[in-house]
Image 1 (cartoon, one colour):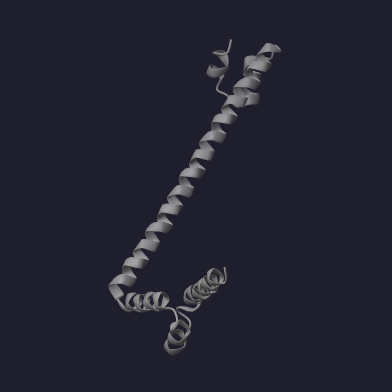
Image 2 (image 1 turned 120 degrees about the vertical axis):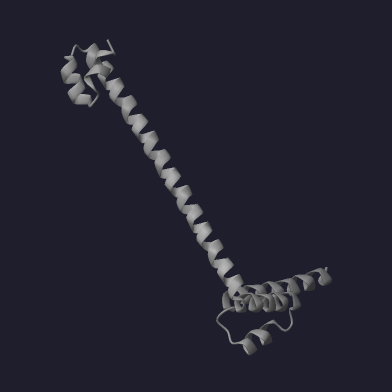
Length: 129
């Protein structure tokens, strides 16, 4: 049981190193980051790869292009959602106007009054007869 817990201790240290890498990776000086990661080879390797990545202008441009793509994609999704909501709302309003017009017709309201009060075209109200 004790050996299993010591494995968890190491896991906790490794996890802490990963978190430090992600939080401080672009903020710490090279010597401080290397010292912090010296006991964790996988994170040290990730840091070396990160340094190669940020030193390469073509890779940075690809990353920026990907970020722009993801932002555009999210904007398109949001726009489509808003359009769908607006269409649904318009359909609901039209359905409610027809329902109101039918009720008014049953109560004997004049067709011109029904059209004016519901905003429906007179021809559409006449078809409800």
